[in-house]
Length: 427
Image (tube, rainbow, N blue to C red; front, side):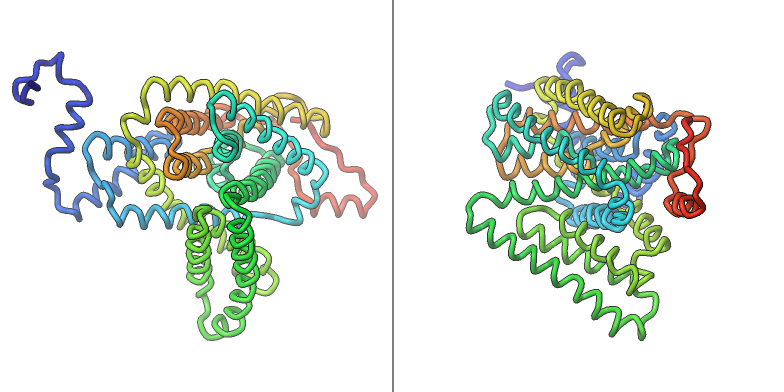
């Protein structure tokens, strides 16, 4: 018979016992005080630990795991879930707003080559996952996406804290966004390809959503803006949330709808300058910075003890030691061949788009809830993504090259008109 907690010896009292005892104790803090303490934990502790190059997102996930597994706090808390939804929606809305189609077109040949390489990489990773992890085609494809898709919104939100040059920033943004665009398309096809009928219906619904969003923006510009100035921010968030819930109902999670809303707003920059202005981008970024920690905290709450066993740690290490070096080498070699860029600089670009945090968290949840993958696979993906999120802070938060000519398209155009030859100054 199991000993009572009072008679447990120090050798018998382990972490599992502590978690069970803590979860059995009813919370004594008033809800208001609990939320105040949570706000302090999410907005002070991660900032403090950033001085040690520990990303705030990783700290937030860890705090959620401690609160959930260790103390049974905030379990199935609807407030946390709502705040978490605002976080993921605002993050992908920000990523959509950051898409610069003119800049992408300018570097189309290199980006197309990059995307072709990524598609081949995804196909190869899917094949390996099928055989090594004994998975069917659809979950194997999702595992490949989880391993090799950079989280554009998270990466863009983190660029300000990294020591990157202007040209590196351009390539980081371009490669992360272009890769995520393709990944979202693959995710949609993978999740909706259960039957031909379901795929056709889901595609039709998505096409209708994409067609309706511009009409909503035009109606807002004509009927609301003249009588309600400075309402663009609230409208943009409302549209993003509605689009996110629409794609969530399709079974492709919130991120696709929010991203499409951001893309649509970007397209209306001429008709509604305030909708995709620098002030709007800053406002959405600030909004996301407040709510995103709740998203990561909520993901930590959903972790279970069996997800982080020895098998999960080993699998996560295998993912990390194979997927990340492969990505770095591919990016650096491609840039060397196409742009003549030195390998160290190519590795910096590759390291910057290594974090897969948000995309992996989303796909890991889908794999667990819809495909019933074993806990060690779910946990291995979590370990992998938390570890690769540390890479930019370790690699990129270094003194940038002594000098590098910024990537300014307007400057290049002006010099071209004057007949000057623009030279790329190596750092």
